[in-house]
Amino acid sequence: MNDTSTAKLGEAYSNDRKPGSHYIVGVFLGTYSIGFLLLIAIRIRRLILQRSKDVIADFMHQHVPEQNHQFLHILSKGLVFATSFGMIYSGLGARYLNHDLHPDWGFFHYKTHLTLIFLFLFAGFAGVLESHGYLPKDSLRASFTVGLWGEALLWYDHALMKEVLIDMRLHEYLALTCAFPALVMTISLILTTMKSSNVTLSFLVFLGSNLALLWHSIWFITVGVHLSGMPIPNTGTATDLLVIQAVLLIFGCQVVSALMVRLQRRINPQSAQESYALVSVSGKADEDEETAEQQSSGFS
Image (tube, rainbow, N blue to C red; front, side):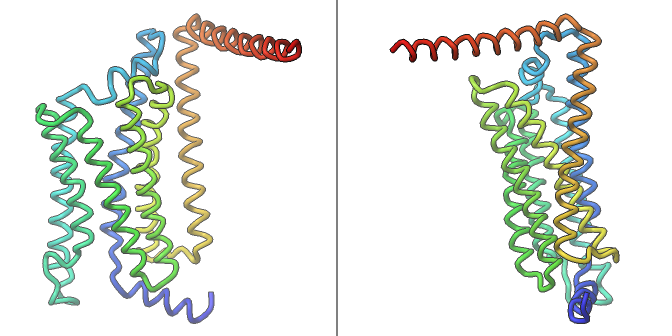
């Protein structure tokens, strides 16, 4: 790193360093996504132990959209309280914690942060209304998706204001890791409303939306570490970290999926054999059909 880049990096650390807020948001989103991933695993395990013939189809039918109104109410109220705390922390922090250095700052100084938090306060409020039957099913997920799209747009605009290249790239990746779960959740919502859609595909997209949100939370914490005095040296390293995090998350999901399949085979080996036989018969039927078509075209 040359003297110019070092000077710019030092300047970046002297201006507007707010690692605490990145940690808080990262932990919040991580807790939210990990909680849902654990809930998915618990519910699937329960269906396996109940010897369900089609675990994926039963899971999607029973839990997507969310059918437990009490759980939905608690989750939504938790989202409202957490986001309310976030707005108060951000506003009072600007007004009082930074008062000595910036006496002119007021409660609404961090307008971007307050706007971001408000997006998910809106989602939590929609979830509360859904839990009481005032809004249609999946209103919480739909509102949360809107919040993610808004967050991605705000982070991208925030990145363009950064003068240091590494800071710009880190915040561009914040926008990217936010837009990705927003896109996956949008697709999941569409597939859920399509009764004729592939059940396995719908489940994978639903699972992927929570996995993508976890990726976003991990990147939030990564940016917080960078702002805390452990700088990421260049944009190449930032890209490496982003890709490695995504691959490790997918690998972890594959391991859990393999454990679930193993559990199903141990609990209900007959179902596993029937599934394998069905795949074999289906594959053989496809081969026979292809052979018949080739023979027919040969005669013609």
